[in-house]
Length: 274
Image (cartoon, rainbow, N blue to C red; front, side):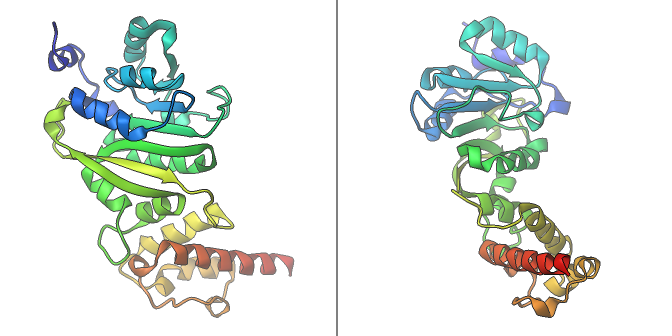
């Protein structure tokens, strides 16, 4: 019988796709168990790879989809699982939740060992469809996991933390060593669970993204300096807004960014009517 490690060594991972295949079955079962739920859940796996999670997910959900960009892996999985597996050959970053799956009976659950090089893209893709999603269990680089759960006043706190915590309640479940993969990455990984919030409470999500990006673009400066160019371009007087702009962005809580965005949105709306 071929071991997991030997089986994966037979397939040469593609470095440009960031492929590091999980080979530890105990960790695979633990990740799938962390997703929770029942047979009626609609589950989407990002990048099934060699199928270490896939075989357990097929047992757990009747409405299971796997999204894989690698054509050779798609062929292998199709050969192994046949019609049992709803396999979508696509880049997840181009996935369409409205068109690529049958209309789910409830909200969607997402799972995957995601490539380090597209972690931010995957997270923002999920946030864009947050109203359709119940939760996600994702394996990512440990340093990124620490960033998304970070609190104001820490060096890790930034754009990714604010955006993640706007849309979800993130939690680090456990760490995974490099020895659990083939090939072995140079860093530790963490499995994170994101439970989506019912609503983001922000009036204009695009404006929120702009405000947060501009604020952290010069994170060592005050909010007054960081947002100066934005306010000038929008013809906004900061005195119209009830906020202490002498603060630095890393001290501003997510709820305060929401309030700031909503106030700026109101000012912009008034200006547009003049």
